[in-house]
Image 1 (cartoon, rainbow, N blue to C red):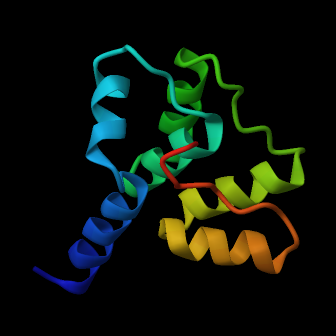
Image 2 (cartoon, rainbow, N blue to C red; image 1 turned 90 degrees about the vertical axis):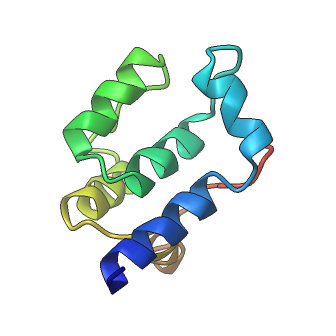
Amino acid sequence: MNYNSEKKTGDVYDALRDSNYIYPILNGKQRPKRDRAIALCLAVGMTDKECIRCLERSNLGILYAKNKRDSVIIYAFRNKMSVNDLNAKLIYLGFNHLVVSKES
């Protein structure tokens, strides 16, 4: 396993911290909050367009480039950043980080 795949595995683990949380989502019994959905999309390697489609289908509000925080998130997708790197960038720029805890 190379560094990139180890990093990706860590991102997926961070985004899915609690497997008891993800199963109801996959079964359609629970809907994630927007930040959690974005973190999951980023962690599994989706493109920004795939993430937007996922958010659209989940009725969570798409990424909007004119929104400064969303534009940073789009940048992260296009530059294949990790969830942790995106959170660091968001905090550095003064935005709320993507919440990846069970409650979100």
